[in-house]
Image (cartoon, rainbow over the protein chains, first blue to last red):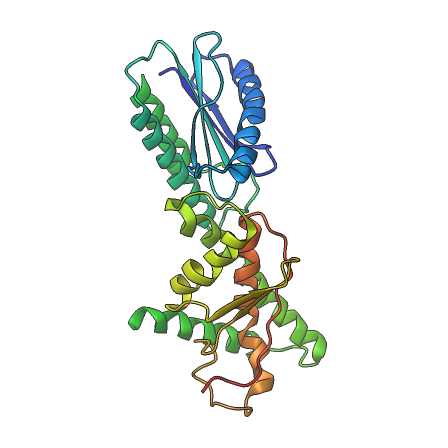
Length: 141
Length: 149
């Protein structure tokens, strides 16, 4: 499984970063960081858009380098999800990526509703969130 | 409307519980209890602010968020929409509910008016929490002209 996901708070600090074991974790952190500029651009474009582009799914973020494709998604609470997959995984279609983001979104919402979770903290839910991400990354392989 | 009653009863008990064991029945203690209620509402609002808009498209501007509060949030919690929304377009909004479900059980008119703030604190927090999740820092206050008939 060669995919990585990150969840970023409204203020752009990481709530959750998970790269697959074969990946260079530092490189992934860097990719997420550079993706943020693109995500922020898209968010502000959404605010000014004359066209009715109000989707939460942001699609492809920026041209691939190193055979890595980055996808973005932002919730109404301005929490951002970034996913990076290997470009060799050509079988992945747009709606599969969308459904992965929806799963991430749904699990994140569950974390928010967990009374033991303090909003703004790092996500440390092992059973619910972590295992959802694991099963998602396995699917991508 | 069994669902609505569950929350109403729970809310009534929350208020009663906070006032039952008052170690400090003076204004200081009162304020503390109101803060506690407001804080509870805040955390619930934070979660609702994340869950309720989950399937909707992105909010484009502040007014969209206020409309969301008046429609989606209010319907989810109180099974009705807000009756009116007014604004001075400079950051102040007035949301009016003419038959607020948490007060409607009490006698109408002015009889229990001074008890009303206890029953508004949680809801103020709820709104503040939802706004906070959606990126708006706010101050939410409530006032009652007279209890709903």
